Length: 74
Length: 131
Image 1: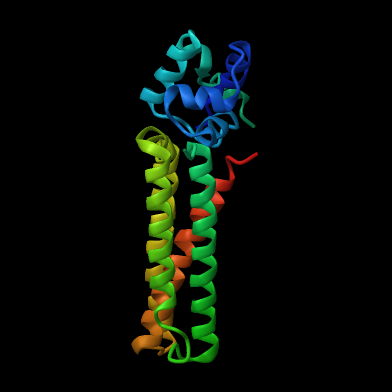
Image 2 (image 1 turned 180 degrees about the vertical axis):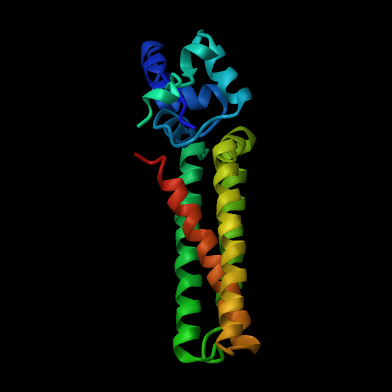
């Protein structure tokens, strides 16, 4: 399942680099990079840490893609 | 003090070297139809060197940076790499058995190919976060 995320936008809005955000929440820069590039889906705990540090809600960073009605799938 | 990012880079380079050594050993053993002419100590010695390098780099990095380098994306990658190594060992061992290749040649190729796949897949997964 795809997960839409706006981590990069919120991080830039907070004026942080990937390395600074990683350092602040105690993960590697690679983890932040792979989350932003939708390669890695973080745990709930890490998602909450990111949201808390950026001062936004978890739902502001991550959201499920809108469901496509079955009749529209060809 | 080594940063968490530097530690991940060092680990990736060390694993790449380990993968290269193990893959070369497996291919050389297969090509030569015997591992007897190859230095049997090379793969375990390489693994031991990798362990020592990462261990001392982790000591130098400190607890916080080491923990950051071993975070959940690393745990996810290492789990995938271990799984691939496991299935490679099963597949290679079975394939060699079907080909009637047994004994220490089968053991050498199976162990080093599984190790090579583990190291190389870990490196490949690690490289996804390098851009």
